[in-house]
Length: 114
Length: 114
Image (tube, rainbow over all chains, first blue to last red; front, side):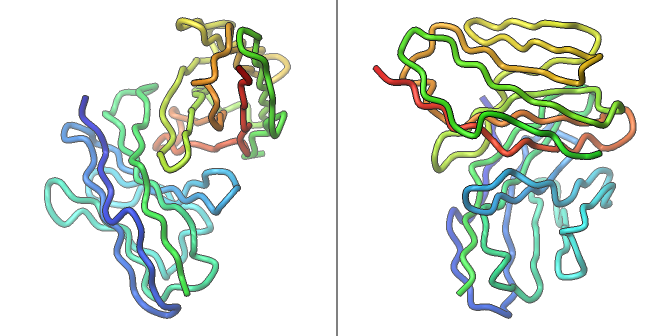
């Protein structure tokens, strides 16, 4: 069964550094998402992406965050200047397109900011 | 209005018993209600989902009950097994008015004792 893949599985970065998290969504999916999960807390929506542009973003997704689909397969989340509070699991998800079709999640990247 | 409230926070059930997890929402625009199962170190995996035009959906040992007037829905796991031990998240989405971003509950950690 096709799946969403995320790399790296764990990223350790110094505060203030830029970090790029990578995702390869399922190949025929059209909608792409990033979520984050701070340790022990709920999964929170960050941003959705469709037709090569951001379609919705949460208040968490401020100017320090950006997303890109640089080619036909990758979907990236960039944090420009990381803060301690950015430490979390970051999940990428994708969805085929039709209303009610499920979002499929990757196994996440654990981001640790030192 | 965007919150989904989930209870209980944790649940211990004997093998063969019934596990019941409840969720409530406020936003009447939500039209898609999935349940996700998450094992440690893994991303959320879709378990079962329901639309508000039905009151119950069953897939194997998993049943969603949906009460539109009360704005509540619940997950029932029949004949609970130790392999069901995981964290369960309810979620809600407004596919009709948004790109389908999911609003998650805080999660329920289920432990099934042998």
